[in-house]
Length: 224
Image (tube, rainbow, N blue to C red; front, side, top):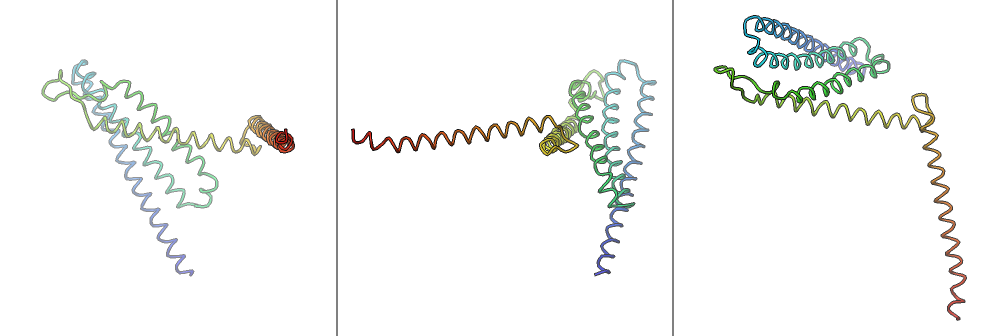
């Protein structure tokens, strides 16, 4: 049994190490891509005219930087979780899991959702690319549209899903009168529950009384 547990721990640690190394490679690649995209942006701004740069180069490179930033944040998240799991699994699971979840929520929830909405508001500048032969002609960049739709879908699911779960958790803590809830909300809820229960009980008693009176009066009505 001890040998099997040691083998499992060894395989798990190796898997965490591989995940950590892979996430570091992804972060390095993303940082290099960010750097070269920024360099290209500066070079194009100096070599091209201001009109062509604003119409054809500026927004596509900004869009590329935008996707690379979120790819870097995702790789950083994998790197962070693998590092923490490798250092101390129990401490991370008990102490830092909430902070880690909130980090991912804010990065890939409201922040990503707001960025994609801003991109859709500038749809013509972001999703249309200039023709290489004629800068006056533009075509719809399908890949950019697909990336934006995927990012919008993921960020919407994360934002509203996490918000609904948090609302239910807050409501549950409130009706239990715990520290993480709201005392007034719990008081209003239980007041409604008790009033509803009393109302249903009185209604049931009234129905029973009416049924008894009907049973008592029915023979008299039949003799008449």
